[in-house]
Length: 248
Length: 199
Image (cartoon, rainbow over all chains, first blue to last red; front, side, top):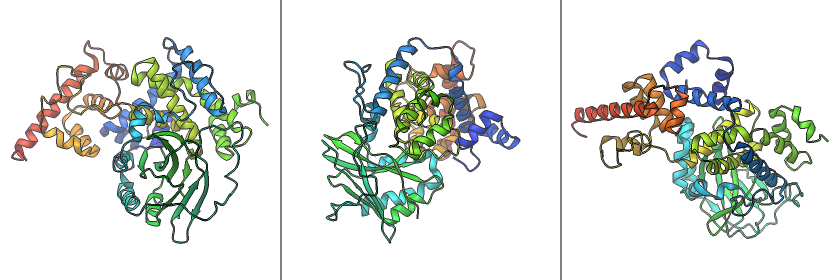
């Protein structure tokens, strides 16, 4: 993406108010922004379109599944053979294939963050090289995060018990063991939830993000986010909430 | 405490902020359900447009909505919530769909088989260099062809959806436009490589 390309906020502004002369001059020469604007306008217009066949049934199922996940209750509409399993759907289909992609492959998803590519590339190399996954003997400190899960919370969630920044800028994540999980991994996302990279899976419940990796990942304008994923037989069975990576 | 009924008048951005502020709070679940419920239809319709079958669209929409739910804390409130949901839904679809090749496309060119035209395009595509592809498209295609090819290859939109989106009236729809655009690109690459002495 060039410096003059419209970001999502710019596309939204143009979609609502129309392009300024500068926007228009750019749109005239940039097929990427033209098509992104076209598709975004198409998305915004979808609610006005006539209802596709079978949509009301699909909506009932979708809302039921959504409610079940949010409130942590079994979904009556899911029915036999339904793919909903009360855990994050990312353990299925294409997303599951994506989840098996390597740490290095994750970096290819940076097309939209071209300006950050060198920094994140450096961070990934640093992570791959300096990654320290180890069990810490010290007791996990509860900063009000580690507590019993309320009834209304999703059932399949890895609870991050502690994030601690060290004086040298490293960040240590510690999480509670998740029932049934054999291994864990930490995944780094950009602000638009594109996966940037992931750690190798390991059995330990602490992950130390080296200071150089933290600095490289957090220096961009959009910030980075991490989540801990629990795995069983190679499939993801649960994940933590996504947390913003602390900026130095 | 607000009741779920009272959420109906609350703007999307305020509901998202409510969930993000206190994800374990008593109102978070209901607020999230209301917020994401509002986006069920648009998300499903977008996914249906992208994958073309109802079951696939349902699964993909579910994935997008749950992705949004799980990442509500990363919504910063700097833009409209609808644009944030669009990014998530779009990313979900792009992850699930196979990206068509710039120069060969089974859906748009059923007569072209992969391997029929091994050549200079492969190196370019393997590098996955969007800027280089953009420059190539800008130089050699007219605006209509640029849009059709970009929609197909980078937005991964089905051919019939491109036909509708670009309001193409002729019988072959976007298929003809895409075939023509690919032919031009292939010729341009062949000329470029001939000029480079086949390097």
